[in-house]
Image 1 (spheres, protein in one colour):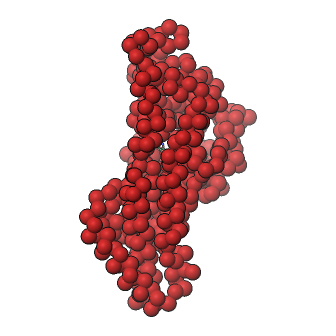
Image 2 (cartoon, protein in one colour; image 1 turned 180 degrees about the vertical axis):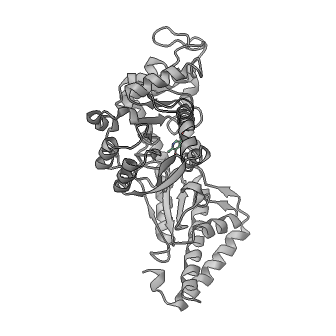
Image 3 (tube, rainbow, N blue to C red; image 1 turned 90 degrees about the vertical axis):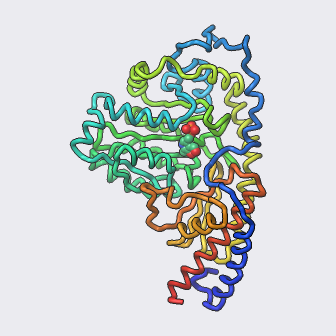
Length: 429
Ligand SMILES: Cc1ncc(COP(=O)(O)O)c(C=O)c1O
């Protein structure tokens, strides 16, 4: 039953009970923060062996390179090979980065700003002539939006459907506007909605005509191997791009941040031949080599694609109970169907909730006033503006189960209160 169909008397009774529950929570003096998608201690502890795979006699790469020294700018060949096999991307189309893929995305933007790409004017020069724009599937990842906002792009919201970005809208926009320089995509278990792009979406992104010759797809495949319940594999965008010659349009990012150690992983960028050649040339201005000891450590620890997949099954076994708990509480504690809806993803790191329209900010304020930071309001939208004031990203991966349970129970109380108060207010009560 929906709250909008319940009687006013019933809703008032519900509200009274809920408010008592809320007051009890306020008295508990909680001080919890479940707002970021960090790996939990048990997940990190799975990698204990990583500290022991290198020692003072064991730092040589397979070709005899001493990994303690400068050199091998584009990444150790055996590390590149491992990820090439895992992701099915040719080794020659991969450049390894440092410890963070977000950092690599930032670098790539700044290269385009400073130098342009493949003969096109630098974006900094183009921005003097007209405002540059960027397509942002929503809800999306706040770090992406923060970056394109800081760089001055006018961000355009694109609804993220169950198949990926609304491609009718994307195709129409990019075909006609050369100021649109790119789109953010998290194709598998998207942050935060958990959507997996359909084959058709991948095909259309690869094929579409763009008015800007330097239009780029930032294909952030951060959760490529992060299955929890079912193994979805997104269509290979490079293979889709090949018949159209659009491989350089794709900047594919991947990292082991949520496989090994967050902030101490290995990341990579893959693209077409032209972009990779250009990136290698420009990288020479920037660095002698990334952390080869870390790359070697990853190869010695992760060993094979199969071993990585098995490791991710162990990670999933740690994370699944957390996702199950959140799903169960959201189901049990919701008083009416329209109080909120949510999506339990097959993988990734988040559960997305849509509250009763116009309630998200209020819910998050209420949880904070009871000592629990659940999420940052509207952070899943560009400019921190959620037009419906309803999307909330839940991050179940980090807190211990007991803390997660406390936080989600409180969240549900607040979501029920906010929705019922809104319904009553809409009735003029
Ligand atoms: C979609 C997405 N991309 C990138 C990152 C950050 O990855 P890294 O640690 O490799 O910078 C995250 C982390 O939450 C993410 O969710």
